[in-house]
Image: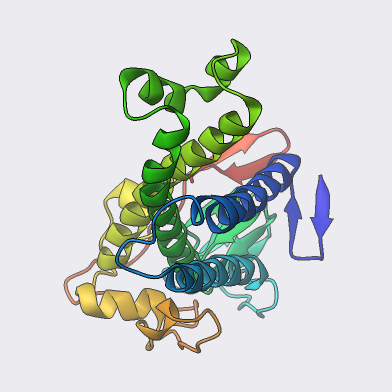
Length: 294
């Protein structure tokens, strides 16, 4: 297990996931720009425009991804009150009073403001301050995978001998076809990258839709699982609560400033909501109490 600064721990599985994600994104990008784009017709748009679009999407993927990792949503740098306030709860691991929606992560080894879940592909938790970057990262990653998949459908069928049952199965399980000599190594690699883009679009697109639904209700994953909607202020204000005042600009550049209404110590609940006393499930494990929700 590696230490990343003094903020949180990076487990071996997290490090592997981060390395896999970066390698996959850069490999598919190289494949699309230097192989696929010059192997298919430009269509209605000239090739330079596709290259420009690809670099714009890649810059937003990597830019927001870096910001997800670098933006600290933990409570470590905040002086929390000694006396337990109403709607607050005591974290038995950190031994500090935590505000509403701030829960402990055993992997990051700290409490985080408005904790949503631990993202193994970023090696850190998604919380109040980096959720905006996480959501935009998912948007551009799914968009990039879809963009690549559309181009690959024109490109890969030519290498697989046209659209047929054989080519469809070869596209789904290229390793088996390469192992038995039906595909050369180069076509095997092309097919693997094409399949990676397709699976990436289905997986990441599903994650994006899931978190958009949560955002429109101003829910964390834990609150969704428990059916809590006490912070639902209407879809438009919910977007502001999650993405900040400049919620449109955040989709243009990760460096755009978009102040959040909440500092993480308190949140506005809708008028008829009960007092937000919701706390995470705690379980005795080994020598410590550890929170167990994603």
